[in-house]
Image (cartoon, one colour):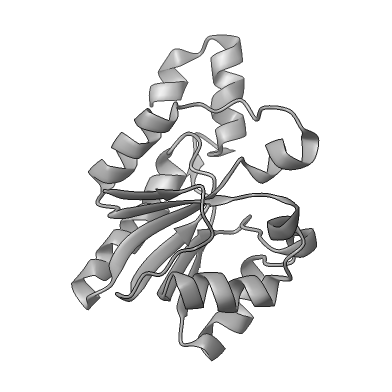
Length: 179
């Protein structure tokens, strides 16, 4: 798996299928989205995962976000799912201030050559987080991008999320963490 980190100077020439997310735990919800991206390889698209470094939560709060996996663990899991490129895009004041439309057009459609985007319902990017699921569904087709927003995965009556996994860890409920 190719890893691109620490630079905004990215140019991917082959059309990509991309997912935008944090992937701090690569839980079953993430895996569902990742499998949809990897499936696009059948259509000639290069499967890629896009994340910000540091995470937006860490950038805005100035505090570590409490990752569930080390970077190398996350990279290994993403590679095993079939992701071929991991982009860790620098989160800084310039990135945080970029309008969602500019980010979608210049970075995702432009630099990363995205032709398919899959993301969770809670996806956000761009200034003030305005690049949300509704924005992607409205704007991506105009840039030649097919988009899918994936509903949250439920397990045992709870929405699967990294926050939920962290709460299981804090309570010592390891069977729920791994289940």
